[in-house]
Image (tube, rainbow, N blue to C red; front, top):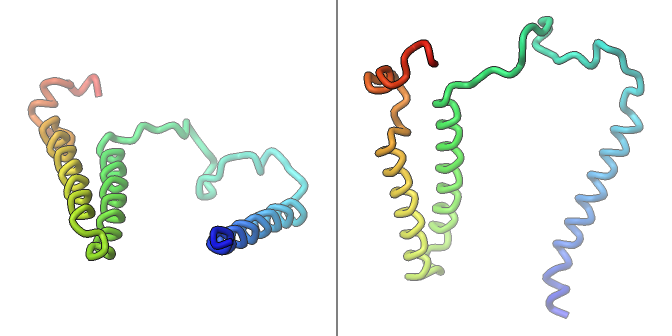
Length: 134
């Protein structure tokens, strides 16, 4: 059966992965510490006694940078994959990657128009959101 011949390496890989994962979990359970005390349950903050809440609000630009990184990382992975096989994909592949890039550029343009790329201080935002509300 040619279908089984193609599927056999995947089945072996899955079986080996499950055996390794199970073995590591059993080893961690068997070799791990079985005692506990209140000090072990405390959060670790570089040897400093924890003070205050761990729930700190991160500034919005931090999240924007993280989202842009993910978007452009995924975009790069798709474009590099297309570039490796561009000669075999033909005109259909070119149309697909063109549509993909145009859709991303339209999204970037929309974010730009909405002000999502303006992270620094702005006179308009300071007028809209006074210091007391930040």
